[in-house]
Image (tube, rainbow, N blue to C red):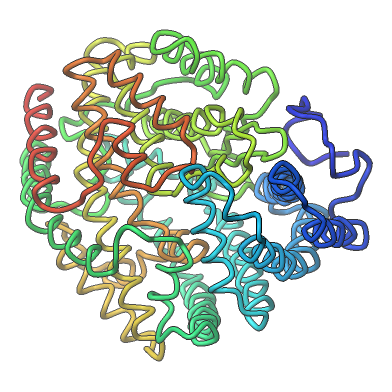
Length: 576
C-alpha cells in the first residue's frame, strides 16, 4: 500500500528516453541510461541532435527527482513508518551518491561539446552558468559527506516530529500546542508555553549534538572544495551570483535601522494594550485586546474550500490550478502525530505538478501558510510548458516572491474566512508578522554566518553568539527565568539544520513581495499580470531580470527597505 497521500498522477508528456517500466530506486536499472547519454554525446552531429540530448537528460533528471520527492513526501507524512524511512534513506544512500558523479560527467560533456557554441546564447545563458558551477564545485570526496548530512537531517525530522506533551490530560504535538498561545487567558498561555519549552529543553543536548555533526561535515565539504569556510562555499553552491555575504550583512544592518524601530513600536503597543508590565514569551501571539483567537475554519476541508473561493475571486488561471491540486489529492494539510513539522511545497518534476504539505490546526497562520504554499504551487504550474527541465525551477529568492506575494495579493479576500471586523484584524496580524519576520530572518542568517565562519566553536560560544543576536533583533521581551529557552530558541528553526543558509532568501523575497503588493494597490490587474509573467519565466533568466519581470527591483538596501516599511506602517495605522 502506498504511503503517499495521492494516487497515480496524469502523465504530462510521454517518456521518450526513460523506459515506462523502470524501478528508479534501483541503480542497476538507472545506470545504463546515464551510459547511453554519455555515448550519445559524441554522436550528436547536428544542433537538433544536441538539443534532443539535453532534453533527454532533463527527462531522466525529472523522473529521478520525482522519485526522490515522492519518497521524501511519504517519509514526512509518516515519520513513524519504518517502510517510508527505509525507502527515503535507500534513495539518499544508494541513489544520490551515484547520481552526483554522473551528473558531473554530463555537465563536463555539455561544457566541452563542440556544438555548444551554436546554441542560442540568450536561451542558454543561465543553463551554461549553472552547469559550469556544477563542474567547478563537484568533489567526489564530498558525495559521502552529503549523504551523511542528509541522514543527520532525517534524524532532526524524526526528533522534531516525535515531540509531544501531555497537556491537561491529552497528548498533543508541539504544533497543536501553538493554538494555546492565542488564548486570552494569560495563565493558560503561560502554562502551555512552559510545557513546550520544557519538552524542547529535554532534547537540547540532542539538537546540539546534531548541529555539531552538521557543522563538522559542512566545514569539511568546504575545505574539500577549496574554500576557507562553509559560508563562502554555500554562497557559491547556492548559485548566489547576484549578491555576496557582505550584501547580506548590510541587509542585517538595514533591518536593524529601518525595521527594528517599527518592531519595537508594535511591541510597546502590545504591552500597553495587554496592560502588562513587560512582554513575556507567552504574550507574543495573543490578540493584544484579549479577543478570542481568530478561528478561520473548523477543519482542513473548510480551509481548502475557502482557499478555492479566494483564488476564484483573484484569477481564473490560478483558481484552475488549485482546483486541479484538490482533484488529484495533492494536498496533505492536517496536523497529526507522526507527521514532520512545518510546511512545504514540493514539485513532482516529471508530472509537473505541485504538492503541498502543512500542519493546519485552525489558526490564522494556517491561512497564511496555505496561501504561501499555493504561491509556490502556482509557480510550478506556470512553468509546466517549459521543456528544458533546468528552467522549470527558479532561484529560491524569486520562488519566495511567488509565495509571499500571494499572501499579500489574497489578503483583501480574507472575508471568505472571517467577518469584516475579523478580516481586518487578520490583515493586521499578517502585516505585523511581516514586520516581525525581518528581525528573525536577520537573526537566523547572521547566526549561520557566525557558525560557519567559526567552525571550531564550542557550544558555549555558539550560545553566546545566538544571545548576542537576540539582544540585537529580539526586541523588548522579558525572558527572566527562561534564559535557557531563549539560548536554545534556534533549535526550532529547521532551516538551520536541514537547509543551511536557506533563510535570507525570505527577506530578499519579502522585499519583492511588498513591491508586488505596492504595485497592486495602484493597479491590481497590471500587478497580477506582471506577477504571473515573472513566474512563467521559471529559472530561465538571472535573478534581477526575474524581479524586473514581476515589476520589482532586486535590491535589499536601506533605500529599498525604507519606503516599504513606511507603507506597512501606514497600512497598520489604517487597520488599528
